[in-house]
Image: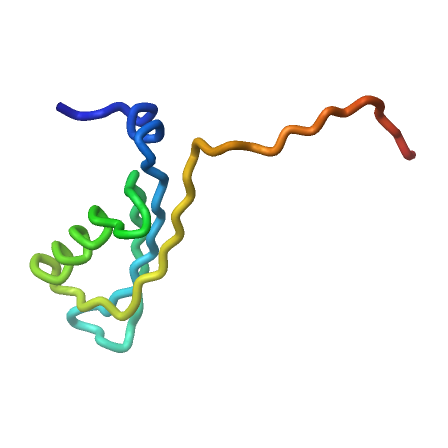
Length: 89
């Protein structure tokens, strides 16, 4: 059964965004990029590493590098009580 995005966030998943740089099979001097996003758990990132393994096994373009970031969407936020407002023209 597939979890909804809200359920995943409540269970500790965060949004992982990865940018893959890979070489074209016929033009090895050309780098392309591919952006991938998925809800994943830090610090192990099992879905990201599963996708990297899929890429290496199934896609002809060899990976040059991968850079990624991870952010939990639900976290304790900073709350600040604002008493007044100052406007400057």
